[in-house]
Each structure stands twice: as C-alpha cells, then as structure tokens.
Image (cartoon, rainbow, N blue to C red):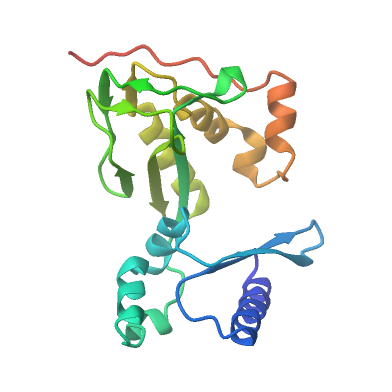
Length: 215
C-alpha cells in the first residue's frame, strides 16, 4: 500500500457510495495486483468483522458513529479528518480444527485464558465453561494487536497468540501463530493463494504449545 494508492482507492469508494446514496457504515473491498492496479470486489453494507482494525488505526469507535448517524447527528469531527496513526492486525479465533480442513469443533471450553497488555485487544464473549453451539458461525473471539510498524504489530500478535489458552476444543490459534512466523507473510510477499500453498506443502507447524498454567 502506498499513500497514492490509498487515496485513489478511497476516492473510488466515496464515488461508489455517493452514486447510490449510501448513508451509514459500510466497507468497499478491492483486490490489488502486483502492479498496484486495484479492482472492485464487493461492498458490505454493514459493520465489518474487521472494523476493529479501522478503530485501532484511526482511533475511532465505528459503532458509536453508527448510532450518531441513526440519531440524525453528523460524524464526530475527529472521524471526518482522521489519518492513520498505527499499524494493526486482527486474527479471528474460530472453533475449528486447522489440522482437519478447518472443520467446526463445537463443544465445552474447559479452560479459557486471554492475553492482554499494551497494544492487545480481545473482542469475545466466551469464558471457561462456555459451550460453543453448533448452530452458528464458529467465530468465538477476535484478537487485535497494534504497533508503530507492521512488523511491530505482527510480533506483538505472535507473543499474544503464545499466551492464548483455550482447551476442550480445537481453535485456529495454532494456525494464526504459524502464519505470524511465516517468512513470506512477514515480508509482505504473499497473495490470495499463500495459505493453500503452505497447507498443501505441509509447511505450517500447527503443534499446540504445552500448557504451563496452573488449574
């Protein structure tokens, strides 16, 4: 991403939303090729699962702004003129088994311990003893880390994932931890096919860490 490309994509997004009279939170997604040409992919007319990234990077509360819009109020002044201030990354913690084609793993969580500290944010509803039902989306938590640079955010995410303990069910925590260690991902040398290539080549180490916490 470059400042020029960000501006072009932003202007295209504004043009699209204006053309249809859209008014509320929404996300327009683009795909970018290796020559930095971008192409419209889709628009989600709702708050995004990834909205936490925007909140951390721009120091805002998008849910609060939605409520302001619904109440007929304008955007907060600091939102209208916000600029990126940090780098952020989010990992979705799903009740899925990454070693078994990401099959859902509903069931009871025997032990739950989430990481914390500066630059680490957890959005979740689960706890020790919670039963993940089989009827809904398998997302059980989101972990967001921020840093002065992209690598800072990745390193902080790597440490936080190593401190994330969920037992009783399989989760995607080991998968995310493996991705944070991957050289291509860390170097920004990846595309939409990286994950499939790594899995098919058996190059992702998904072994769980030994639990050292007292019961």
